[in-house]
Length: 203
Image (cartoon, one colour):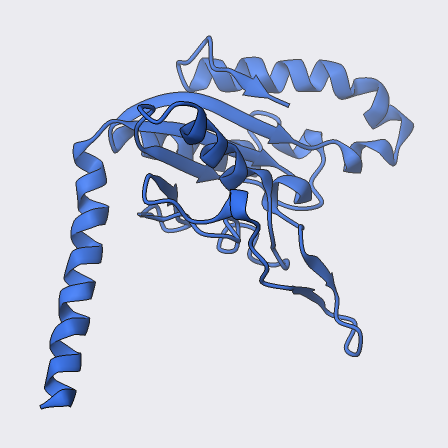
């Protein structure tokens, strides 16, 4: 009897979860794109294991990064799921991910404006990438546009992009000198391709 009851409860829980994810498509999503390199993908709480030397996340989630029923994320397979740290685990999948700024930003927005509505985070960051890899025509740029457009088709509007990148471009002098021009071109191309000329970008 106890076993059957457990099965019924599990079935009800699974049904309730799927309904909640379906229901977000009935409301207007406030879409926030997350792009850049490792600091955006999330390296908070990641350190080399003392014995094996392998990067490991400590699993500690600060209060400002806790899950929120109003915050969802677009997964790697283009499905809306509840947003939980590490946000980029299935995007920057070849590296160890921890805490990034995405969840903290979304929670801060909701705490300032309780009527803001549902937040749809669109993680796109990949650690170790330089700005030239994010230029129009490149794989990272095209993936970003594809994921952002898919998010929009779910219903909603672009509200912002968070951009955290630049460390990799400090290695070579030429990349340093070209950074400002490349960044302006990247932002302009993205706003144009997303048909969002006034998209706020927080760098």
